[in-house]
Amino acid sequence: MTDYNVLENNVSLSSQYAQLMAAVAEDPQLQNLQIMEYPEAESIGKFYKCGVGTWPLIFSQARKQEFEKIISTLPALIRKAIRIYFGKDGKLFSDYLQMGDSIFNMLDQVELDKRDFVQRFDLLYSNHQCKVLEINAGTNLGLWEVDWLCGYIDEIFSRFPKLNLIKLAHKQVMDSLITALLDSVSRLKAATPNGNVLFITEEFTEQGIAGIHASFERVKAKFVNKFPNATMAFCHQPEQLECLSNNAVRFNGIIFDAVLVSHRELPPSLHLKLVSSFLAGKLHYPDNPFQVMIGNKLLMAVLHEDNVLSEVTNSEAQFIKAYIPWSKRLIEQQVNWEGKEYKLSDLLKEQQNRFVLKKGESMAGKDVIVGQVTDRQEWIGLIDEKLNSVGWLIQEFCPPDRVQNSDTFGFCEVEPVWGIYDFGQAYCGGAARAARVGKLKGVINAATGANIYLMAEAAKQKLSI
Image (cartoon, rainbow, N blue to C red):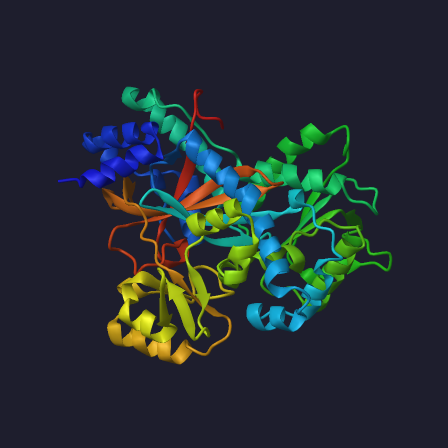
């Protein structure tokens, strides 16, 4: 028998999602339907080495407004917390975040426009309260391919009268990214841009490249008056890129105005040259260290430092406590947890199920250990081993609200983590990962075996393709 709370959670996402799940729950044909049978969904699954869930996670307009609140508030609040906590102390900054103090020394000199940020917020709902787990900053965000699922979901819904009444909308992630890129390029101060965009990549499939090109052509048509000759290219060998003495960036004889990097072997010397072009106002480079640093998970601990909470406004302090799970560096000796003083090592061992151990800089669910699903002796050993390790933090464990959906084995209860994209300081679509309850050891990520799901918003019109 389905737990009442799961049905309540369906409704909490949106009435349309509850309607969809009720229809699936009573119809074996819908329960057995697999979107992985469609070519693009199969391609996504092969690329990420995971399954693709059939039914979109439909969120209400109230939840969309909450996403937008996080996007507009959190990045600025993190930068405010940096100024409060570190002051003028570059060494403290470097020791705490394990980043070069040269970045800190330039923070006040580098003019950042929040409209230029390229990032994804990973969050979940726990007891119906939104909790931000981390921010992924820079180009290498992934999961944008969910755009390809829209047409199939529209076709599936149109086949079943009970589903055809459900109205959805989906913000196209790649179209939104390219729109934001061209807007950023148009604001370059030391260049006369042509709207040329270059991806340095080693991982996109031919289908992925074709999909990005299609997005570029759609968006380019809206900028035809500003950038009539805009072009886009892919560079798979970074050494072919030229950084000229005037800070212009050239590839195959073309000067590019924006460079995005999704390449694990980018030479550090090339990265520094691209940063120089960015600082000179000649290049839009979302992978510059001043923007990417916001993805350091240790900044979640900075937000929870006592002097930060006492110096931000009351509403900002309330935002931190509501949306950011309690976080502390693992090298802390004493902490205040739920109004009581504890020796950190004792707290973590006594209340293992309440905490998650994380490395400040990692990706794809690596270096994340969930106490609730970790063997007792292994957990104690990890705490003893990492206790004096810089670069690690402890965070309150927030169990995800379970909802109904289907995975590659059929209809079930799943635990979702939401990924919401921010390009140009606006909600620009999303992709969720979810796993059947009990399948994974705590970390819900495509790299660890979770399925990928389209995120759609409840709307008054039909699904926008």
